[in-house]
Length: 461
Image (cartoon, rainbow, N blue to C red; front, side, top):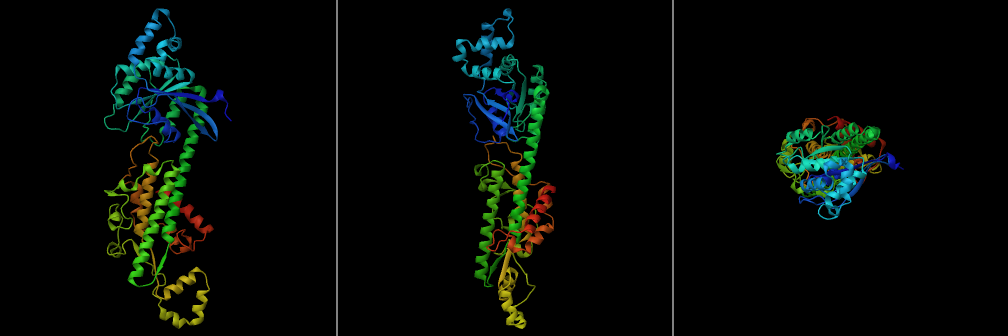
């Protein structure tokens, strides 16, 4: 339970269409909050949201309509409360809220000012792509009259054509020297921390509360990251351990290869869905058919040699050619033949048939069966694709409307383009029962340990 007297109440205010609702979406990690549209005046009423830490409400945020006519409203305030009356700022605003025009021409501005008077402070959202105009200065003057701290939030700072320097200078001239850059579409990893630090400077009474929220945000971000790497590690183990047995005829081999590819594509898609859900995004944010990765589409066949070349992964000669590209025959028994089984005798064969999974695999190999598994290069590509997606998700605001785009190359990709796979995946190759894709899947403490170690190695890449 929260003590209402200890909750920090913030009104999110600003000119029309500057990204106020977008800010709340990103802070709450809720892409469904409010309505975001390029048309001005999308928010017509006040909506609220809460920020919690350990189940306790710390901050209440109120999304308000955009102010549209600050110049005319400032003139109207001067008529209602002439300077000669010497009313302070809040009294001037209250007189306006009691006037008939507060329910007619200036109804939208009245809602904003009424909410700001009720709150402890305001976040003034600025679209730094806009030029600094007189209407912005007038509405800031009106908002300052409410007598509460205002923290300018400089939005869309990553956009081309932004006027960040001009806005910083203009706000400083108006006495607003504390401000924070927070791009609601592509926020910096420490963007929320900077926001709460700046608020704490303005509001010493709530500094401890804001520090608690800041630390909780950092903990939740680290937890999401760890969970994401564990999901990727599980995918890689499933892929490395999986075996598909096939008779040696080409038709059977082709069918087994198709099965391997289909099941692995499905497993990768399941991982993608889990990652999107963990970061509170939806499948609409990542339409696989339209996202570039090194000049090719993300939806390109996972087993196509070009997909591997495009991310700089070395492709073996046998893999780069023919229908078996992307898969390798497991020479698991080092050349044992059916004739060898005859020499060993029927008794040994009978023992193998009644033995564990390993014995059955040996017997199948002796009968001429081939085991098809995923090539190292495909495992590398799987890792690169998932890590690139996590990188994008961690830098995406929940107000973003365009599809997720993946970085073409980063240090993580370079690490996975090297020659050898982690030892954990090499061990998984010898344990087909570790793959959840297999009918013989067996949960084990060792598999769980391997997944934890591999996730830790992914974190260090």
